[in-house]
Length: 554
Image (cartoon, rainbow, N blue to C red; front, side, top):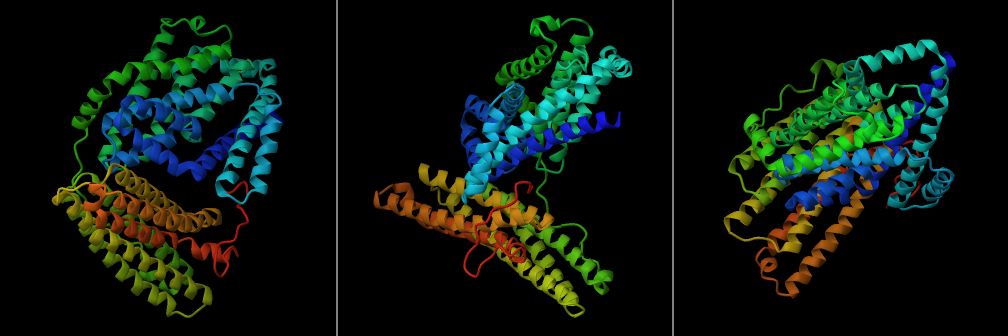
């Protein structure tokens, strides 16, 4: 029995890790392209649905797409109806991914592993290396599913196991709730679906119970994004809540139909595994087709149910700085790190808000940014005095160096906040009050560049929380990439000026200054990675070394 449980747990763990490996590989290699693709699809609901579908297939996660979409919605870059269309497409995309991954690939597994390892070990280009990571992850998904098939084979020979699982076949509500809880716990509806379908294919899980668990996994998958966005802007919460109601409510209706024998599983396929997979795919396809014409109505209803948030003031709550910890330098530095993270989150919030002002001017939002900047200056002053107390202890060089690093990072964040609050908001104000607008290509370039800087700001916050050397390396490398991208965009802008494009001439100073500010803000956030990379021995005197991150780095 112990060996059996270890085999099942090991196979399930490998499946979860392999799915994560693919998702993180796609995020690291193509995050900017995904963000840009989602935003560019904001003018057409059908295109938005297709974009959400493709993004979920690449990321193997509708939750990841939901988080990207909610981020755009929070800054006003997406209408609620378009965002909901993207999430419906993403739900269908995750169902298609599960269908594809359940195939028996044969020689594809060793081919994927061979090619993935070659790309990962032999290339020095980050995107090529991450492509290798994705291929290895796909191969490991197939391997884990074969392990599950082997491990679950003895279940059908156990009378006790058959009796326990048979109970679920007579209590579909319990099976539904188990599926929802499992998908929530593993934070991946795709992995949950793959596990359930594999078990039913081996005869280890009754078909009706498996269908109920698959429907429950749809509810659990939608719940993940809902919980993760509870503290987000109301515009983000509206979209995610609507998707939860549609997906979860629809799953419950289908469960009722199954329980009342209103839905004959034989319609879905000849085999039990085929029926379970078909109900998952059919459910998401029908839901997408039925709700697509109604997304506008649903979005307006969500607007009424969730009122607009008042613009938050600069009050950031209780400080993380504990004066009683000054006698214990490591503990004091931990307090300083938490306060530094709060400062970083505040600057990122200001950046997102200021970016939205370029699209739609709002006096309340601009006032909120100014209040946040004043709050951040107070936080910086308090942190400097606190770190001076840590440094003054002179008990060990490590604590003193940590205080200096934190102080420098705080200064960088305050400088970034100043750039956003004073300069970006002024430029956005001029853009709207003077009645000018960027050229079509210039506007697209700026929005893409803003997306990239915001993605780097979020990566910097992750580095500040985890201290992961792999993420720190990526953050420092992005600093050079951003500088190159800014120079390229400045050159493109000058070309438009030479071509006499009137919009570019009218907004030339605004365009160039915005690019310069965004580059400086990105540099401020990138500084979070330098101490970590230097301690890892990966920073030369003039440039970042090329050796890559370990395969398992998350």
